[in-house]
Length: 227
Picture 1 (cartoon, rainbow, N blue to C red):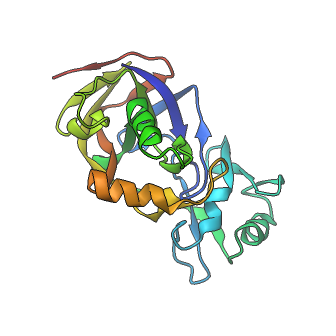
Picture 2: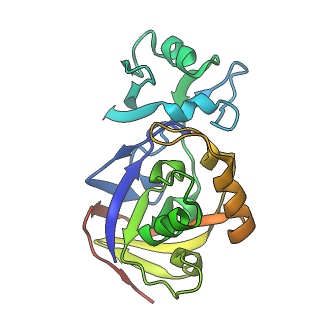
């Protein structure tokens, strides 16, 4: 196998950025979900409550600062005085940006395979299947499938994998929710995707991993099993 795609999501529930290389620590990719979105009650919210967030993109400018790509084509830095107002207008809800950190060691990274994405596309020919629906950090290509499920990573729980200097331990399946039905910057709203995943895969798609040994990874790095 090798690392086909590498993704960071600088703002929780907002579209991410595709990377060529990145440092990964015990809490995951540096800068991943380092900013959250608060609602009018001053509580952290998500795209399940504010669907418009998924139609916004974000790229890292510097630590703790991102550039938001709004659906109408405008771009604004998160530290700009009017950032909250412009984002609120774009998502049609009163929101503000704030520092955020998820401390979930057992789910530091979300991993999927190109095999799974192809299997989904074959099973749902009328749906637009794109990685942006599922928001993985790592997408691996060349995974060996047992020929029965088309979703090889579902059988990786408990195993350990090396990618470059990074060492991972797969901990649990990724349980899905309405996030994968939402319109993103590249795909339309589609409830059929979640219905199929719930019915055929027990509502799990992709896997979470803990970082046993931090390291820097690059797209194209070879991945090999440690057990």
